[in-house]
Length: 302
Image 1: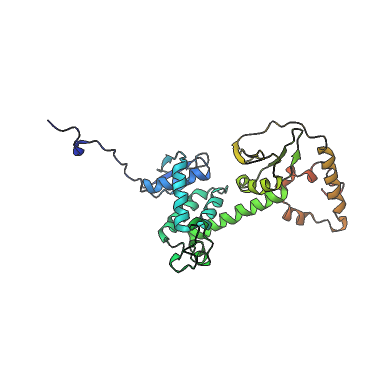
Image 2: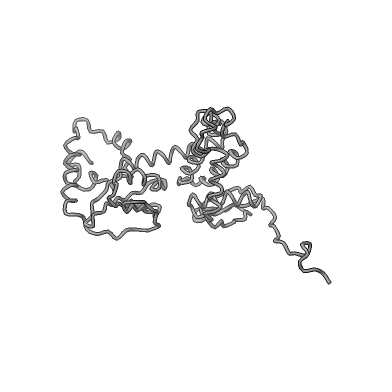
């Protein structure tokens, strides 16, 4: 009679054979993308495409794997990138993952594959701060920056990622310029936007530091995402819209004052609509107080 505890008789899970023509569909979040990167390694696969499930267009004969977001797996990938490639490289990956570019998933995946294969983020052996270093994720030593994989600009995987990184950070900068907050009767502040990248997570710290203890919310209508700050910490909320209280008693007065200021500082003789569209893209106008009906005055805001 065979021993039921014999390890040779214990059933083991059967590993699936790696697929050749495969695409990964994730939920569109950075955590979902990092989970897809982990699963590509775990499955020993090299997916041709990695994209959000609602935008993925499978190729002829391609198998699609749906990747469920797993925060623990995403954190493992994050720590692996920080440990192997440094904090700066991870921040570039995070920024790129927030892009709306349809190739974002594949670009991030190709970069991580290349960066992890390099395994040359820091030269700690020659670093003068190696004995007092706070850890690789926080390393600011010059030797670490010199050896960063992000310096390999000639590599297509690096160049494509940096292009997304720059585009997302440029969009973040525009949000810092063009967000307009409204004062509500409950004492909070509210702003809405429709950026070309999901940059609300990248602006919340900046505004939280300036609003201090005043609560505020930023609604990204394009990505159905809101950042909510309640005076001590902020969080992200998935939402299609917001049911707002009425304006505070001084809000209409402040909007009128801002419109008058905008109109008074304009120089009609130097009115240049093309230049204004260059510095203030027209896609932001619907959310700008000064560009609403009757805001800038006759003639200047045509």
